Image (cartoon, rainbow, N blue to C red; front, top):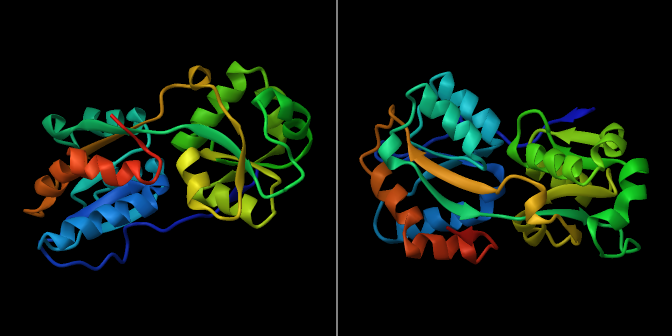
Length: 244
């Protein structure tokens, strides 16, 4: 599979000393940016958010990245950090959910069940986040395996660094189909959903948040509490996430 680059990393994030640095899954871009603006509107230093694949962010944290909060697109990467003592367990909360979909920019592809795309999945490039590490890619692989489509699809997969990079491939026409989150599809005016994976075909898509043990911002816990509050979840709901 061909690996393609996506979003940036923590390096170069400038911020006020008291502002929290948040490492957040790439799929959260618009919603988390809105949440950071809402928090700043309350008179707090505006949080600085770095978006990338959950896997890349977790590895940065393991390497000592100076951050305060981590929001993952799956439980596995949060589990890995907790096992290493890098998060505060009492601060961990799963607060959002999502759906997995197939998108296209091709107006000739009709909407229907995933099974209706069997031939296309087996014969045309399919953009996916890295299926070995990135949550969106792992969810997608699990769903295709459960539906009996992975073996035929795998040779067509064009692997991207994260889910937004996979979405960009479809937007540019580099891949006729892409497997992304429903919220990613909603954030793009260039693609449309042509199939929704049954929820039972893959592990539940959940977003846990936690404060890092290395956190230094005095505002980090306040922002975390805001994100998991009813008001914070309502911001994410406007972008299609499911509050939990």
